[in-house]
Length: 281
Image 1 (cartoon, rainbow, N blue to C red):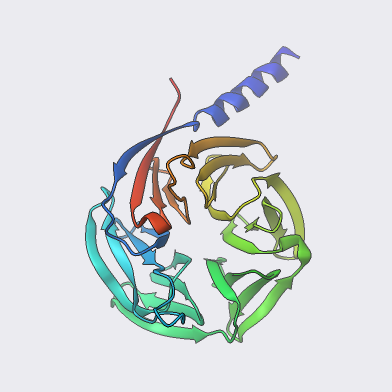
Image 2 (cartoon, rainbow, N blue to C red; image 1 turned 180 degrees about the horizontal axis):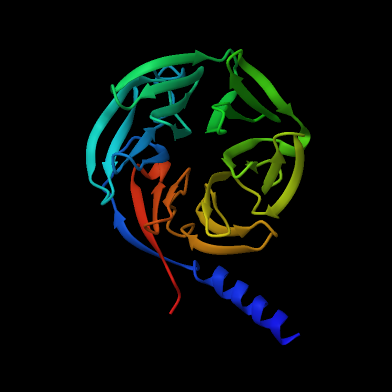
């Protein structure tokens, strides 16, 4: 019994080790609705999608950009990639940056620094976040629906349509599982790719379940309206950041676990914040 109690206390201490977040950088308003951030470990930089919003005519813009920043938050290039249509989720797979825009997915060659491919997706729905599995299959959430798309060598198809994932937003493939933030019911859910079985991990909150990143034995998960949580696979939820009173948004963030650095795109605040996740004293 004493040994079991010891193990429980050790597990609790492991959770609490990630329960302090200190803001170390707040940028000027240099961005145009920054929505998603991805870390390029090969080059030691990060990329930021500038969503911007619709044009004056109410139609999707086609002049949006991806910015490049340093680990210290320095803006290295505002328009590192141009000619995009309201980009949202981004991620890196192998040596390419994958970008969701309004009518498809853009694959940007980071070595050649040029767009390698555009994959069109015919839809009027809102393509949102993106992740890839080890085989290179691309998964894209379609917010406002109950769909996740998959793009393989045969092109885009509806991989899963189920009310259990209504209004999906954030998505992450990690260690053989798909993690999905379902804004329809405010939850973090897990999907087994081989069976497409959906299971609940935890209730997060009744708003937009946005970013998802690995952290320790669990995951960091954001509510766009201004919260960041650490969530265990067993369903334990611990709040680390709350910026609601400040009116600061917390969109599709990046977390570099080896450095304990959290990069937050604050969308309608047009800025980026960097936090250091520290151990409790």
